[in-house]
Every structure is written in structure tokens, then in C-alpha cells.
Amino acid sequence: MHAEVHVEDSLLMAGERPERAAAPCGSIHVHVPGADACYARGLAAGADSLAPPTDQPYGDRSAGLRDAEGKLCRIGTHFRD
Image 1 (cartoon, rainbow, N blue to C red):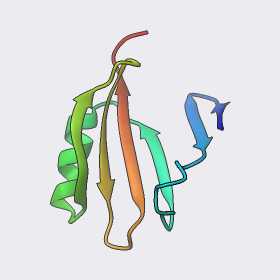
Image 2: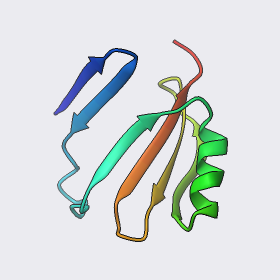
Image 3: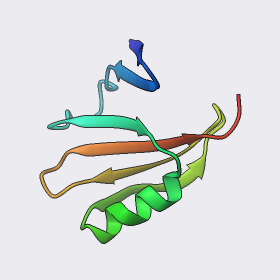
Image 4: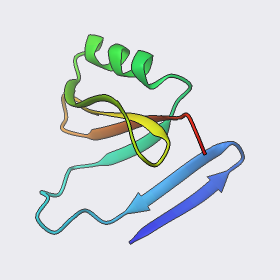
């Protein structure tokens, strides 16, 4: 399941985790102006890397981080339609 809600210039997405995936204590996906710079700031602040910034086939450059409390954060920058 997947849902998207636009609030002014922001996009909020919600979806199910795959059955085999462990349930996180919380997660969020945020579109940012620059995924690479945001990822670097997260690492500098002490986050662990889940996935480095990578161009995705759906048109986002995205990365994944985990904070000290275990929350997952996916960040993405849209680069093509």
C-alpha cells in the first residue's frame, strides 16, 4: 500500500513495510534541495548510513540514514520527471 498527500509545496508519503522487514521505531522520507549535502550533514551529526546517495530509476537521487534512536530517514532530490 502507498499513499501520497501534497501540503502546499511538500509531499508526504506513507506505505507498508515488506513482510520480511523488521518494523522500525519510526521512519520518514523527505524531499530536499540537495540529497548529497543533506546526507553529508546527517553523517557529520552522527547518523549511520543505510544507503549512500544514488540515482533511482523513478527520478530521485535518494539516500538513507539511521539516527541514534533508531529512526530511519530517507532523503531524496527529484532530478527528472
